[in-house]
Length: 109
Image 1 (cartoon, rainbow, N blue to C red):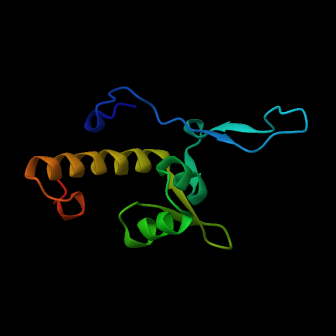
Image 2 (cartoon, rainbow, N blue to C red):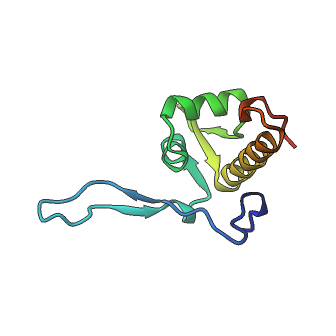
């Protein structure tokens, strides 16, 4: 998936999730998030290196599109939506740098 907005054209979002070790020190579980179509909010938080509550706030505000599924209404974010969000964040940050203002004040372009 091309992502020209961040300078990593042709890069694909891949995150290896480490889930501890067994007694011998071997990795118990590693999964490639890039192979999934939908991510949990915990997966998204890991990719963005933010807290779960910050991830939930991004979803609730509509800044990061997501869907609710199942009887308990658990949130899922499509991988492409996350990549698009990251591209927008790069563009917003670049515009802020060019304008010499903090990125949270920059207008989405």
